[in-house]
Length: 242
Image (cartoon, rainbow, N blue to C red):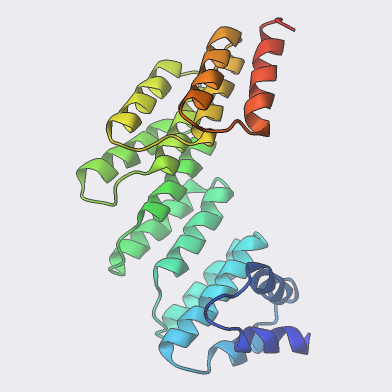
C-alpha cells in the first residue's frame, strides 16, 4: 500500500517503534514491492540510506524471508551503500534463528572482512544459535575465542545460553563448572540462568537438586518467575515426588 511505503521514508531515526518498522517492512516483504522500497531508500545521505536498508533487512528477517533479506544486502553492495553492525547482526540473527549456522558464520566472516568487529551481541547470537542447534562444542569454541582473542568479554547471556545448552545435552558437570566460572569472572547469574539449571536437574529427575537451586536463586536476592516454578514442579513430577 502507498501509505505503508511513505511511512517508512519519514520514520524518525530514534524512538522508533519496532512494531511500526516490522509492520511496514513485512508488508513490503509479503508484496515484494522492491520498486517502492528503492524509491524510499535511494533518497538522503549514505547514512540515511544505510538506516533505511537496515530497516528493510530487519523486516524481511522478522518475516523469516532470508532470501529477500540477503537480496537487500546485495543491493547495498551494488549501490556502495555502507553496511554496519546492524546490517550484519540482523542477517546473522535471522540465520541463527533458522538454525542455519553455516550461513550465520558466513555473514560473520563478511562482517569481519568489511572491517566491522563482531560485538558481544554478535557472539551471543552465534552461541545461542549453536546451542539451540545442539552444537554446544562449537558454542564453547566461541566462548574461548571471546576470552582469548580480545573480543568483547562474555556476559550473562553468553554464559546462560551455554549453561542451558550443556544442560539440555546432559552435561550437568560442565554446566555447573561454567556457572562457577561465570561467578569467578564477576558475571552475576540471572533468573534465566538459574531456571536453566533447575530445568537441567528436572530432566535428570533430581528433584532435590532442583529444589536446592530454586532456593539458591532466592538466596541471592532474585525473585522466581513462572518458569522457575514450572521447572520445579516438572522436577518433582519427573522424580515421582508429587
